[in-house]
Length: 280
Image (cartoon, rainbow, N blue to C red; front, side):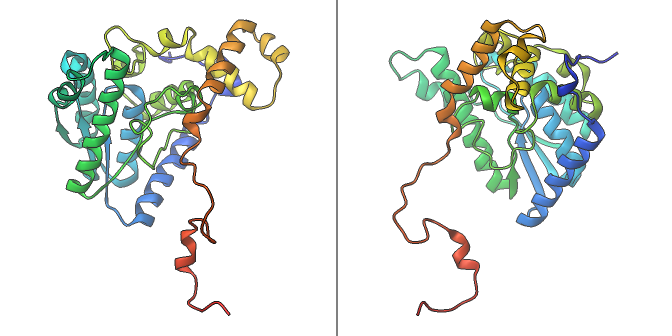
């Protein structure tokens, strides 16, 4: 029996084919960029566990560095589940407690609530990842998925910092399918997804709807279906509206860097790779 069920055929994946695509992508990217090792934060969640499995297949477990980065006692189960993946795959690993770094800043700020403190945690984790990137001479991998991207459910300059994001075009319900196929430990796949940034937080609690419903709506709206077609699948209009509003409200987070065009080449770095020759 599968650990997670898929609510609709539109979200069902060919897991072996997707594995081959993503493993090839990671292997080719590492080769093109001239790096041997990959590094990623292993949070104990299904996304990072899935990326760890893909990376291990792409470059070999001896070339993957897994970082466990706990904050206070929020990271107890995350540490245990992260270790499950590390032991399962035989990855190189390091554990760094970020509590002192986060609290050193957060406790000095007036009005610091858990939402802000969570963002500080995410950004400190990326500070560590990018520092260790240099220490290990490794390429950092991100662990976000498409549902999170469309919902804006990530910390800017935190979760999105890594330029290599193997799951960013894969919906969350599809990540679960891929994780089952890859053999990610059952406790990780089966647990309620959480960013782990504040006590009692869960993703679906924040959304007010399940990933199954969110992905069903997202997949159909992205494919051009109208609201009538989505309602015919048993989804309430209020849920469709909630999904659409989350995507619209978070649009700014997906824009990337906005640069006004001033120079003739407008930051087109490819000019440096063209044959030499003057302008007549």
